[in-house]
Image (cartoon, rainbow, N blue to C red; front, side, top):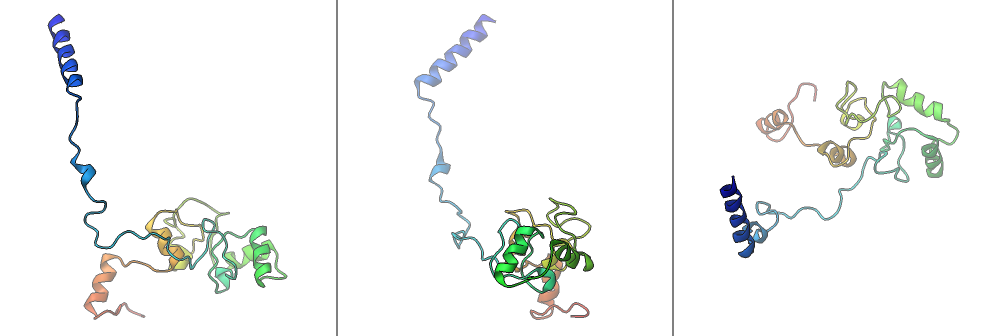
Length: 169
């Protein structure tokens, strides 16, 4: 036992005396070595506002053909009125406008990233108005209105010279 402790002490003394410098070649590696284009320095433009982005002045309620996907609230109605929309409506009428169309809001459920039974997000053709989780692909797609294709959709588009040949389209 004594010999083991002495050996361990010798190793500790030897490494501390040499400075125990670890060669760190990764420090000299450039950031994003495989990227041809640098990462964006500005956030993407917000087309569809929601609770995370905040209401954007001038946007109408989504159910009325607008681009505002914020959860109905008294503050939102005040913002709509400042923008010239929904002048005589109440919160109950705004909520009823969504429920008549089968759209569920954050008041019905939350934190689903639109992967719930009502998903996808209304912007993508679903019935879920819950704001998507920030820093996810779904969030970026919903706020910009630009969607990436699934591998199956990409194959279909490529097979038909850049057009989606899905039935009924």
